[in-house]
Length: 265
Image 1: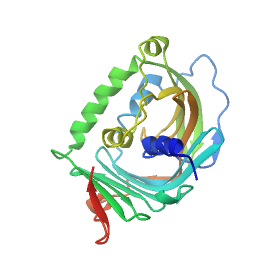
Image 2: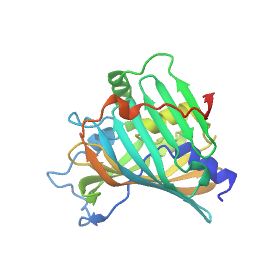
Image 3: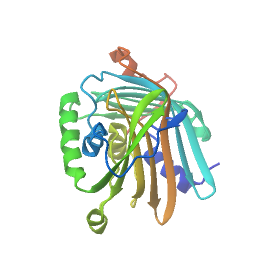
Image 4: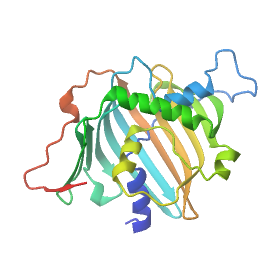
């Protein structure tokens, strides 16, 4: 069983999605960009605002966090319809209390359900979330955060049978001096931080993101971060992924079992 401290780390970031699968590496990128290389700033913005043709995403992904002598890993099933609707179910996990856990969010709020303890937690939005409003906020956030990072395009890799562009993201010296420590991308992470107690100090040391070529959607992410002087590495990667399957509203709804204990969050 992982320590309480390590579980706290997992709880703060587990809603992020990492995606695993066979990875085919392209030749190393040269210092001089090729004419067809994507713009690093555009790739960075794709971690916040996805391609216009993207309607929904489904797949299975793995999440692994290592630190010290401990490793926590999960395999989850994910459905997403930007920028408000999200559903995640834990299929396999090293943490017994997370087995079968469900996170579901839509315009009205969010549910967390833990079958092992028959506990359901609900967060009701004061006003319904609107996808276009969230998209606009994320676009503004991308522009604001852009000045904090040094970006480097690393080339092309195949993830989950999809062609992706690899972007290295590092806080620049000025941001570090100002004490800025912000993770890029992921609506789920942003929502999680609004409702889950996060560590007081979390400093991202290294970060790499893999962005799908067709839909401008990040399908893998790796980051190294420090909490209280301890270093952790987290990788999220889709094992399988599909786009535009025509997901309906019911996919993102959740009704707790009758015997569940329901709490507000």
